[in-house]
Image (cartoon, rainbow, N blue to C red; front, top):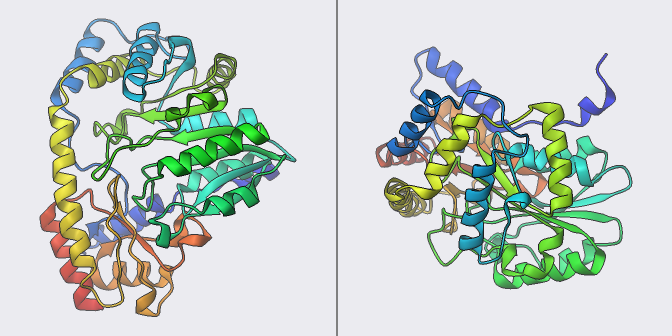
Length: 383
């Protein structure tokens, strides 16, 4: 018999759909994969070479749980320069991917009797870990009519003295939407008023096509109650490397490091060296990747808006589209299954990202333009 808390732990539907699509491929079906949120580019060569060099130089041993001193220093300098607010090395914790920061932060801050506000539709791990912690998940709807931002008046109605943490994500998974200066200012004011923490998931911060990335660090008055989450997976096509990090107050950093000591000890040393090279080395390949993503976005959104029953906003960031499919007269899960079975196109039901995702699908356009065009043709044919 499993512990009761395991019943509160969710999963990521993307990996379930991927497994099903792979099984269909094994039987000879052609499947176009638009379900998984992973750049289809290889990690830039200079980053790979840095990792190989680090292995040859003996970076094969344990390191400090919070990250190697050099890594923390470089990451802190990057955030200071990029966000315009001072971050010191002791504020930084380095983890194997960004998810441990989510997991550790929620476990460290929230528990029974607390409430955590999170975006819905949103990254499913938010709600999963909130439930696991014993806290109450409180969804804030992202509204299509507000370009997938939220209504500040709704947020004000949700925040109260039980609110321990407010999770925000911009640019967003799954919608590709971005929060505005007005949104960030409102969140900062609410967090200060109710003594709540903010966890700002900014792993897509360098994947912005229209406008400028807005960070919660634009409001340094809430820095002492903020966890700013970043990572290398998306910007540098390093998903399999597992490298994430966050800036936070020193007192919390010490507790997050303790959780890492008790779980996975530390982040691989040679991967941290590669992460330093990613931030300090040439950015050409990353910029090329973004240029291609923008071209794919523009082409794919135009095609989606020509499909019967589909209506799609142009996402401002990340590499996802979130078309409204209510015009088909079908539920999101029905369309997800129909497109996989009949068209051989793997996407995700909007409900994979929460109840407010009903009426939408998420497609990742981290695939070639050729395959995206083929996906559009296949969807049009079966619709």
